[in-house]
Image 1 (cartoon, one colour):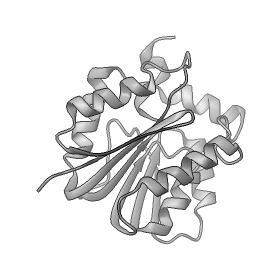
Image 2 (image 1 turned 120 degrees about the vertical axis):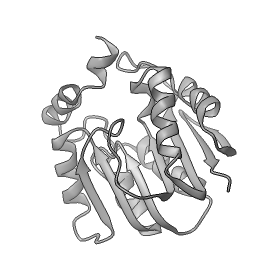
Image 3 (image 1 turned 90 degrees about the vertical axis):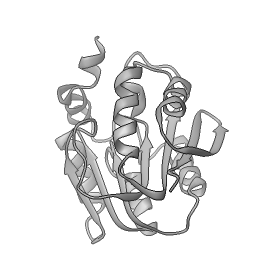
Image 4 (image 1 turned 60 degrees about the vertical axis):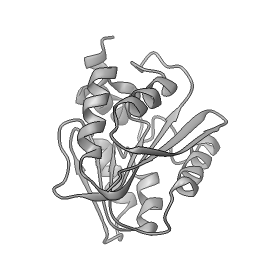
Length: 193
């Protein structure tokens, strides 16, 4: 399977149509621990405006919503977006839309971008360009937090550690946090004024 196939809408749509939660984001103890640890890694208690690309079925989205004034989340899969929208129904501060996170972002700037479980679907060059474009939309002092699994998958173009190394080399931000956990890594950067 080529890298472009692993990034396609059809690839993800097939996964979410086959099963509503193909990676067990809502039920796996590992995934729930990863979400809890991600929230603990965030540097502020509250954020004004945040973006979560690749939100999948919205489990992390719903948790982030408790700390964000207005949260935008997107996923390439219409089926995933439908599930995320259902999960976040009643959260007036959350907007979920279908879109390719590599190509489209909401208007305006953000004080938080959570880039979780997404980077390894891109080549290093494309990942660098995507991350720089996103980070350029951070407010001064805004955070870019990346979270990736450290296992191996035939679906991934890059390993989780490679994703974070590309981010470290390409983001024009100061790294403010690095942590390794059982199976995943969280790195955070801040856009300097």
